Each structure stands twice: as structure tokens, then as C-alpha cells.
Length: 380
Image 1 (cartoon, rainbow, N blue to C red):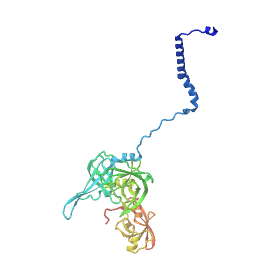
Image 2: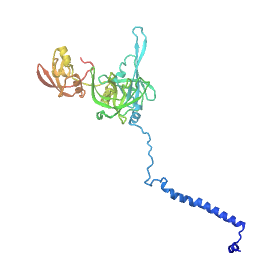
Image 3: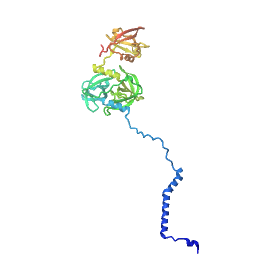
Image 4: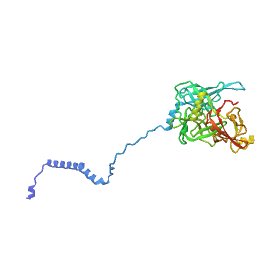
């Protein structure tokens, strides 16, 4: 008989069942709780690491669209811009039929009681059965009357019988600088495109342009000025009127060359038109010939100065002793070598001003003073 065989105890079946259940629970514990931790420690160096914490980033800035200076300027002046219709009754001489010719332009309200500044060439021809109509911002068409016009500056003032109108703010054209924003507003191509806005810059100042007997000192801009823009405002970034659009170069090889009358000059002319119906100008009382004409027509060779070909009787020049054949050299110390130079000096003078005159007669230079008088509408 074996010792060991005698010493073993006999197990019952339910004991084996309990042992098996305990083993299962231990395996579950190891798989669920211990194994993931062990795997993580082994794999941690090879897993992607989160970025190191730093200062919090500011929230993203979303830029909202804002109004440009052109929008601001247009918003301020657009209510003051009007369309102008100039309609004239024309009779056909051959058939006797009467028909209406119409042309359009622009203008800007300068006083709430209905005064409107525009170009002279927009309202010219208002004779006989012609009529003038203004189209306001709200679309109303109201009759207008001509207050006064001035061919030499191409400016005119008209009036409508309306009150409480939005008058534009006038700026200071003497403070303009080349390169600053310029916005032109008007009615190009008739009234099919009312109150159109174009933008550019001030391209030049004091551009002197002569047209027949008129001498213009103008603002140059590359803001588009088309037919129908005449009489409309040129505006700065603050929405102030700095000029009155008047003309453009439309020849081949020229692009972006528009011109406007400086508002300081236009405003002064408008005040005179509203007060007197015309512009009161100083007058010398002479007719002159420049160098080329003096040589061609009068056989007088001029090294400098202009030839006096006529001195009006009773004029300031006549009273001071000037006569035909004299050569005008200077006016108030400024050389006078052509009509433009003379006009630029006189346009800065007033009736009653005393000026110094330098002239040559029979080869000798002389000087005298004279007092400027008011230019008559029709010299005698």
C-alpha cells in the first residue's frame, strides 16, 4: 500500500466548478484592467504626442466690408445732383414745321431755396420758345429759369421754385493737392444713366486752356467725364464740391483727361450771377495783336509784349494816354506777351483797382498808371 495513495483526499464535483469560475474572473480582470496599461506603457514612445500647452491664441478676426471713401463722398453729394433738360422749339424754314431739339446736362444745388450751378453751354440758346427743366433726385421734373450766365467762365446759375432742397457743401479748391481722390458725378449719355459716379485722382492744377476769347484755369482729373457730365460736381473724399465739370480731351491719343472749373472761382462767379445776373469785370479798353498776328497783319516785329491795334474811346487805357501802335509790355510788373497773360492778370483785379502799365512807343519805354473800369456789355 502506498503512503501517498492513502494520504490523498477525494474532491467533490462542485469544487471543480468554483475553481474554473475563479480562473475566468481572474482572466477578465487581467484583460480589462491590467493589459491596456501595460500595452500603453510599451507603445507610448511610439504614439503621437499632444502639443505642449502655450498661451491661448486670440480668436480669429473676421473683417467686415466697409464703405470706401468714394461711397462716402457719393452719399453726401448725390442728393444735390440734378439733371438739366434744355428744350428749344425749332422751325424748319423749308417746310415750316416746328420740332423740338433737346440736350441734357448736369447741375448741383448750391442753395436750399432752389439755386443750381451748371455750365453756360448746358443752358445756352434759351431764346424764344425754349424751356428749361430740372430733374431732381426723386425723379420729379420741375421748370427752371435762367438767373444768369457767363460765357468767359462757362458758368451759369438757374433756379427752381422749390424750397428745402439738399444743397451741396462747397470745399476749398485752393487747398487741392495732386494725387488726392476726385469723384465726378453727373448724367452721361443724357438721362439714361442719371447721377453716375466715376472716381480718379487730381491729375494737375492750374491748367491754362484758351478757347476763343475765354481763358480757363482748370483742375485736371482722370475721373471719367463724359458728354452729359457737364455742369456736375467734382467732389473730394469729404463729399465737398471742389469743381464743376466742364470739358475733356476726346482726341486720339488722349485718355483720362477731364477738366473742372475750381469751385473757389465758380462760387465767386455764382454769387455775382445771383446778385447781378451777370459778372462785373474790370476793363482796360484795348484790342491787341500777339507777335505772329502783329507781324503778319501789321508788319510789326515784336521781341516781347503785344501790339495795341485799337484803344476804345473813353476807356481806362484811352483816358491814361495809350493809343494804337503802342506795345504793351507789362501790367502790374508782370510780362504781357499774349492774351492769356493779360487775362490772367485782369481776372485777379476788381473794378476800381489802380494798375501800373509798362509800354513802348516809337522805340522808347514808358510807364503810367490807370484805374480799371467796369467792362460794358457792348463797348462804344
